[in-house]
Length: 169
Image (cartoon, rainbow, N blue to C red; front, top):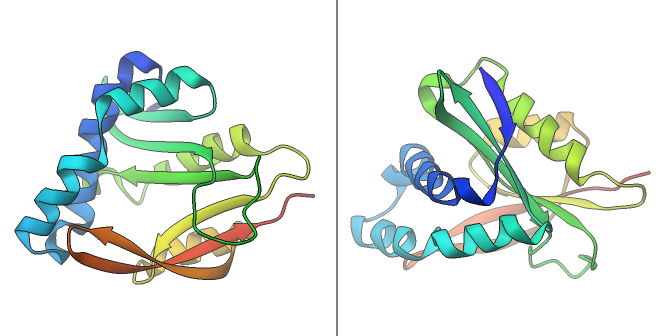
């Protein structure tokens, strides 16, 4: 297993992997038309490329034998919480394909993203599905606390998401 920082040349790969991991993890929860609507707009390659070129966002790829099987994506916080401030950071996505989970690989991706996000005084944020109890426990072990709730649209379906925050020293 290898973790490497993604470049703008990886934008299409990241979008493909994001779609694949989202469907694998959550696809069963949604009517087919809602899932299709979400996927059609959620991962535009041009936006991913632009974000990675900007320097404000970063991504890491987990690879096995040269094949990407997981990723983390981080950048400025975009969560709908009144206490979010300019300069706050957010872990936006952290996914590992099911066949490669439970080996500590998600934790390694998380550590890479946090190393990049952490600066003194910066508040870190994460949005997590309200029913993803394993992720909630994982983030709690790393000092994140629930501070809000919002609706995450997947087509016409609205998921209840928790907003987690960790203050930096």
